[in-house]
Length: 476
Image 1 (tube, rainbow, N blue to C red):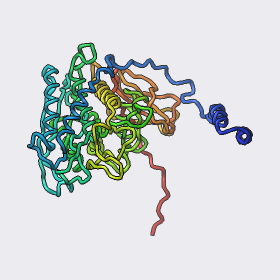
Image 2 (image 1 turned 90 degrees about the vertical axis):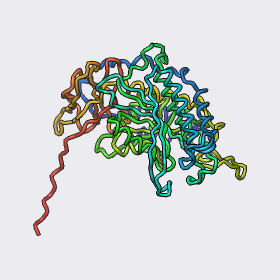
Image 3 (image 1 turned 90 degrees about the horizontal axis):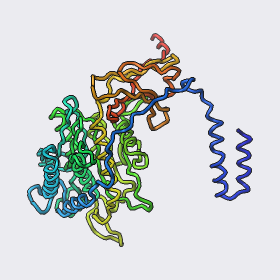
């Protein structure tokens, strides 16, 4: 190894920078091969697994109605301001104007759904520092698509955008706050998902609305006043008896100004507080990337942007699967700014800065994830890992009977690998012994697979905890 490195250094003194890059690219595989000297696990090779294909009828990109999305954003911007502290009763200016526009569009979509989609305006009160410590009225707008499976209809998957906006002073209800990107764009994504998933002809097969679990399309208020609407949404779904299967928060998903676009949308997920595994939110992020593809999704392994927050946070802190979609590079001149021009710089969150192609991609990505997760069997429970100080890993899990389930995929990954890989398939729940696989070198998980090819979110295994012996404390 030392001779090889010395050769590279010597050559580096004789070649140009570009030639050196070519040389390093050519020698890197050989160097990697020399350092990859780990024993095979298992020694005889892993099982050959025939993977069930993903569900048919994926949402086509051309089915996205960008004109409708832009129309809703235009109507929301036309309300002048959507600050939560503004008027709920003025039909032309204020947050009530925005509520009316969203409810009207969702009601039109509900008519086309054949009565399946149910629109709800949820009124409540909340308090925060940004309400001057006083209870204020708020409203969220929901469209609910009930699941068809009696066992899964109380499992709910949520997509949400917040329809309130803010100027530079978050306490000023008189200042203009167009909020085209933050977050009329996310609201438009949620409403477009409702249109796509509630229409039987959307995939050309006539069976598009056959979801086992329930889907909720939300537009919430109070985000800029302290995540008030999403905090209430979490309590509301609990009061209705739902279990949250996953929550997709779309916030600032309308702009992509950098050259070379459209780029991938960023997907933020927190790790939680689980030792040697990942949180439900991280597993949801992996599921999103696997469904939509690495070319569409850039996973970011942190709970949110640095120093920022969003509506997925209350769900994440409750230990539920919740992630945030956000555009690739944010322009802070067009966020949280009262419209103005200073020193030749235009400030303000205007429609003209949006990118319809990128925003349409985000809508398609959200809708396809909701479609597949709502079609999937329930996730396994009580996933466990045993086999410490033995040559074999033992993965066990439980699951209720499900006639529509084909079985389970046992997943594994290197501890430094961000993505799961399928190790084996099991037709029934129970215990699988992974012969010759060390419990130390990998993480493990299990997920359900439907006969339709839809996968549940993976459930990482929890381990037995064996504390090493510690020296006894001397007697005083």
